[in-house]
Length: 466
Image 1 (cartoon, rainbow, N blue to C red):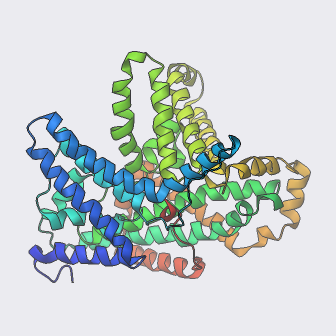
Image 2: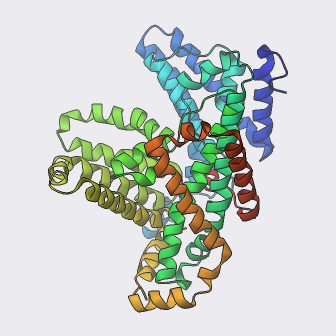
């Protein structure tokens, strides 16, 4: 339908498809996204017409208050209410803040940040406001990346809605291949890992030792394959229609430190935090000296963590990311001097391993259902974690004979090998130069692997909850 209808009407089809897509989840919540769209559309136009910064600010504040207000009301109100009630109870104050049993609007954290960046960029004079209301509404609701990103910038995506996009085989081919790779990550890796991961993290008291360790390791790959798999499906879906969305992951498990890791993981959000939280705070605190970077890193990554959800686990997880970034900043020169004294390959491999170990530890906090579960999981991890118990586990555990775990493990190794090769040789270009028979045999085999080895039970995408 998209390529069959005239160019001037295609935005209408995409907008209707995007609203329909969102309403399939919970129809009445479409009012929220429409309300946010209207406020941001008119706020940006008023900002552009204002003659002074003072005149612009009320409309910027209107946009920010609306978006953050909706986000706070649905995502964070009960969290703050529960914690305030705990304090009030400690002080023997009888009044309590009520709890509202409301469903979190899917994708609200993503489209809220996307529209906020738009009005902020208009306020800064970096972009002109979009005058076409329909195409602006499409920017807010574009279905491939609406519910879990990538979080696009208006300067990248809006101009694409004004272009006449013709049917190109290259777009279809590249898009479908990326969608297929995303499905492989999701159903063959992430959803097969989920079976053991959910079993351990949902019942932390009942498991210990090597069983917990394997579940923790599998979760790091479940999280990555699940979220990057969604990003691949989103980017590929947009590519089929002729649109280019930003890359959201770039082989993060090949990172040599956490600073590099956050340049490779969830790139659209990490750059958003950098541009709209980290940089403004850095400018505001530059008079505090070198230690201002520590405060800014801790604040920025704590916000980063809190963005994920209203839970102390996410706050602690984000705070630890900030600690790691601050540490690496202050030790950069010392680490460079040390790196010159050792074998570069050994140093690189050890650095990758240590980065992964730190990330794995913080993933315990990220996945735990409550802050109290974190200590339980860590304590149980070191219970029965001896060489003898490990040997006994690998010899006798029925878990290792689980077909799903074996499939996931092989698929993980395959994914890491593909990413390592692609990092060095640009695997896409190399593959596209192969003979027709080789390429299409690989496509066919890939689809068969997904259908045969994929876990098609109900496993929603992890980031839908955020």
